[in-house]
Amino acid sequence: MLDVDTPHGLARVQLRHADAPRGWLVLGHGAGGGVTSRDLVAATEAALDEGIGVALVEQPYRVAGRRSPSPAHHLDAAWVAVVERLRAETGRLPLVTGGRSAGARVACRTAAVTGTAGVLCLAFPLVPPRRSGGKPAVSRLPELDAVEVPTLVVQGERDRFGMPPGSALRTVVTVSGDHSLRSDLPAVAAAVRAWLHSVVE
Image 1: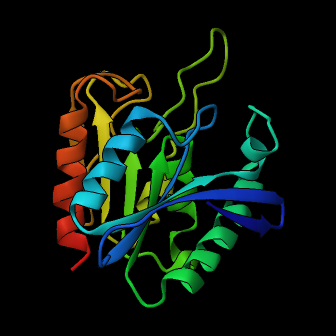
Image 2 (image 1 turned 30 degrees about the vertical axis):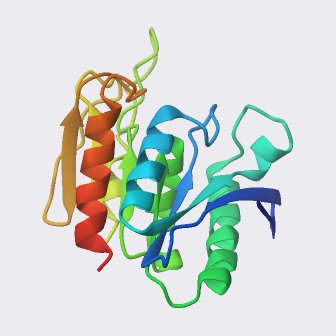
């Protein structure tokens, strides 16, 4: 376990070491969940199988016991501080960032600053469901489009947030299930494993 001071409080990182690692995968949690969600566990096991260590990051608001997420710029600043600390710990090994849902958004928004080799998005929340009588929700696709490194999106075929399109740098893998990605965890792990194998040489 590694505690990291950030501009917005203490973040906590669970480190899962691979034998003779050839890289590291840094993963963030969803807005209301933690680092033990099943898809994050599946991704962690897939990375370790590929000889890639994993750092599971708890944002400061979660460490402080709050369930409601902090503002986006607080999340991003805390994330950047954690990645900078991890770079100091892991040396010159390639580093890939990512996360589940809101954690994926943070990794996308900070990809240029962190210098990541790739971004892994588990259940990217593309368009929030429209509230009754409310205005149409704004798509978060610009956050994905701004990423200039290889990106993998693993999305449930019935995800209520919609399905992001692929692109030259973005691979989208559809699996059974909804936003939770719980229905076919082996498919999630297989997609992550294959993509990491191509990104971390």
